[in-house]
Image (spheres, each protein chain N blue to C red):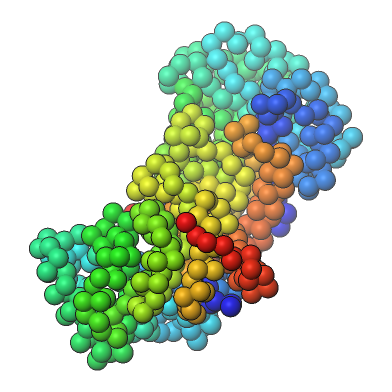
Length: 268
Length: 266
């Protein structure tokens, strides 16, 4: 099937600086992306979040998510305030990077978001991230199962799954299936020179990770949502890298539709 | 807007051998480049004058490195070069700019006056004159109309000199040419510092660099840096770079404001 394709705004960060939000939207719209996600990091976004509600009308792009990073015991109030107030986005992607008070405190924090999500019509997708407290899909699935709340789910990030060498893609996606709210992928090769000393982050037409096989596996678990491109650490001439990534993912969708048997092989 | 785009001839010097001049020029002309920078160690220096009539390309500059002991070689190039008036000069007489470099410049500038040549100082990572700051200091010191600077985006990035806008402002009175490459910091790259790649690759944002130059009204020539480490099909790499350059150029004309970035806190 043809997925919606979105870019993470981390595409627009490089050692040279950060692109203006207006430019980000104009480039993505011109290239034909369906949407984007915006990062508010640990509570100090580089983007003025009050601009989000205007994006669909002004640029024809969907805001597919807002990315937040919890440092439990340090920025809980800040993160909760953003969830309480943000407009123009329905999905919150939450990574848990560090914790002062441990697992129980993280669970209490997530629990505290659920009534806010109910009241404001939001969904919370836990985002496994290498070198973070919650780094594997198994960890976030466990949290989802614990709360079993319709507004709490998980985000699958192909890069972090690959870089953490969690393996068993089919089984991992099957376990995530009831909770799967968002997907992000990237080109990547295991390398000490890559991000976190673990794996490179590259445009989706490069690297060792087979995004064709990965998207086929997502189709098999019935994922019909948007697929995001990571963009972090790619840098360079952003526009051309965005263009390559979009062309590659559209082509993968086209091939999967036309030649379903090409992906019909058992994954390791 | 169709800026003159040249390519440095290093790209044709691979570990398997060096392409003949005719192949170099035919490839560049076919792909839409306007010229080339020839390295001083090229066997084709004597053919420079034939390049324009034969292939329609300009030899914008000759790239030359001064090291201690090369005084006669360097002087001889200045005394004999024909068909090209700019020498891009890297200085590497020590760990920093030394009096050997200064004495060399003192000897070369009168030749430039007499023969109508110009020197563009070429800051180069891991050489004595590494940074644009050092090149600007030499230009100030000599204050000679025939002593200017070629800004190389790759070496600026590889040396982590940073502060692009300030560096361009400081260089501006002397800035004649700009060389660019795709590049990413990596211990596997040139000099253990940064890779040299086609313009559509790497981490450094050449679109942002072009924008910063455009805002200052730069109207000089651009050269693309290629190196043997780039590997692969030379023609393919040349094509990728010219395609990326023209794409950036078009976007910059349509959306100059796209290239205005704010500093990254990361």
